Structures are given as C-alpha cells and as structure tokens.
Length: 380
Length: 77
Image (cartoon, rainbow over all chains, first blue to last red; front, side):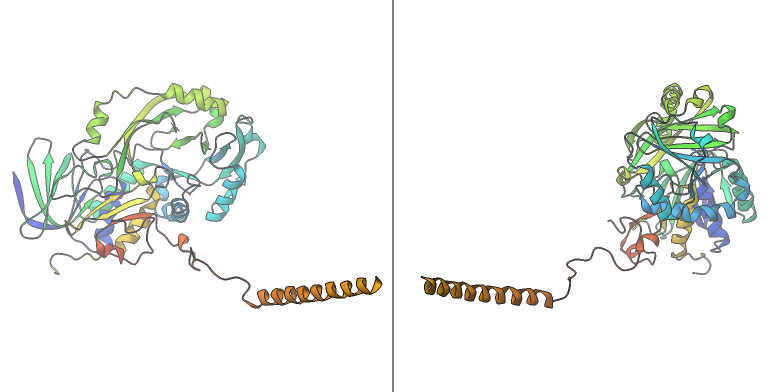
C-alpha cells in the first residue's frame, strides 16, 4: 500500500463532465493548487457523459417540472457560448405532441414554452407530413442542440493539463474516511491491485451511478437514488431524417437526435430504453450489474412503435447500442424533474456528493459552489 | 267591509316598510367592510420560481442558510 504523505487540496472522484468541470473551476476560479482527479476508465468522459442522447436541453422536455425546464432554458445559451466547438446546431429540431395519452396538449406545451421563454414556432407543412396525423396533435419547430462528448473530453484534457491537475486513470476510489489528523482520506485501487491513499482537504464525489459505493466513514446520500439500465440505439437515419432531431411527447415519449460523436442518430423510447431498474444501495455495484447484463438490444421494438408515429423511421438502419446506467432521484419519479443533487456530508466535513442530470446545468452547480468557501492548505 | 280592508292594507304596508328598511340596512352594512380579505398566502409577491437553481440541496444545518434561493425541496433532512 502506498501512502502519499503530502496532502492535496482536493480529490475529485469521477472524470465525467461534472467532475472535470468542477476540477477546472476549483483550479482556475478558486485558486486551489493541488487537485487530483480519479477516473475509473482509461479516458475522460467515457461513461454517462458519453453514453446518453447528447442533448443540450433547452427546457422543452420538462413541461411538468418548471425549475428543470427554466434552468435549462437559462443555461443553454451559456453552454453554447462556452463550448461552441462541442455543440452541433446545424439541424432542425422538432417537438411533436401526441394526440392520445399525452400528459400535455399542444396548447399547454406552447403556453409552457412561452412561459419559460423558449423559442417555439409551428412547423411547416412539409415537416408535419413526416408524422402520422391520427396520432400526432401538432408539431413545433424549436431550438435545441446536440453536444459532442469527445470534443468536451478534449477540452477537459487540455484545460486540466494547463491547470496542472493530476489525473489518475484506471483507478477506482473505494473508500472515503476521516484521518486522525482531521483530513479526508481517499483510498484508491489501481488495476494491479495496489492501493494508494490520498489525504486531502476536500473530496468531490462526482461518480454519478457510483455515488454511494464507498466504504469508510462515507455515509451515503440521504436522497434515494434509482438506477436504471438504459439503451440508446445508434441508427443510420434515412436521408429524409438526416438533419432532423425529433422528440414526441408526453405520454408516448421517444426521441431521435443526431449523435455528433459518431455521426449517427440516437433513438430512445420511454418503454424500451429503460431495461430494468433498482433502488440504489451500497454494495450493489451498478457498473458490475451493467457488465453482468446480457445487453440484448430492443431496437426492433423501438422502431416498430416509433414507426407508427413517424413512418420514415422504419427505413433507418441499426448500427449499435449504447448501454449505460442512468441515475435519477427517487423523488422525481412523478414530475420528470432532473435537479442536480448537491449533498454536503455533515459527518465528513469537506466532502461533497454531486450528481448532475443535465450537461448544461453545470452552471447551477458552479453557482452553488460559488457560495462555499475553499481555502488552500498553505493559507490556513 | 272596506274599512276593514283598508285597515289590513295599512298593516301590511307597515310590515313591508319595516322589512324594507331592514333589508336596506343590512345591504349597506355588508358593503361597509373591505371588498375581500386575504385568508391565506401561498406565494410571496416575488416570483421565486424563476430564481431557483435546479439543485436539490441535501445536507447539514449550515446548508440551509446558504444564500441561494433554495432548490426544490430545499433543506430536507
């Protein structure tokens, strides 16, 4: 076991988008000098930051959760400003409201968009013709973009190099505890079964699905989490749908979006994307559970159902599937809201757990961290 | 006979007069107060829902005094 004697300012667990953005923020805006980032994969932004629908939300998705919708709407322009290289904007985005079993009507949806200040226009007839009019009440042209996670990873890597943040790849943090000297200690397991201990002042647990999988004094999150194994089908869209992103809501709910990182489209479906779920507890490793699952695709069912609403999709070609564990808060089961979980552990002062749901809501976390005090070790 | 009828007519006029006065009195009384009163206030005059961050804050007591205007379900312990 290797023990590093010196103490670092902050250890960030998880090199996804939130972990890297917080590390860079701490280094650049808050002047923390020695930051270490622990990542389980051999690269940054490899898991949930990559395996998702790559949507930069503008609020349209959440007519039943005002705060999530409104904050997405506020944060999208900032995201486009800060990461223009990672945002794909050159496609038409349509939202269609289902006629049957929908929790919102076209009129409610329009009113909701005006309320949050999101751009919405009736779609032109040629676009409306793509949909089956018996099942779709109305179609709207909106402003929503897709992001390229590989570009974000490039950005994160160069920024972190510049800020001199040390990244440990293929390393897994297993324990967070309090050292007798009053610091926090993070135990990190490397591939070759050697264990390293990091002493630090602050720990940021940004592991998304693995949020509760630590031993030691780490108390776990007080908020209930639900883990869901999800499938995103990667499709080669037919020419007519090439430059279009489509979401149908809000009962029958499916979405097809360009996926810039692979130059394909992702297809998700409310019924077939979640394969199974469980309530998160310590000891049930979500990543292990995903690896153990046989990951048989359900794309045929997705395409059959989506084809009823959008006949052109039947000729799309299936290429691949992205399987990932998706983590949501139990309390948002009913309203579809996706707040960021921000938990400060009283038992371990200096330890924060942050679970982000939407990539562009990173600004809300940074604003929250702005209110916290961080000191370099040498100054204290 | 006509004397009896006119007597009765006079009596009913008196009754109607008293009733009429009473109704007018009550009507003016009820209009005197304020047009409505606030029974219970559910929201403040500030539109706080536009100031909220999309954050679910959970944590120790100190968090509750943090200066962000609260997340949904702020300060659940």
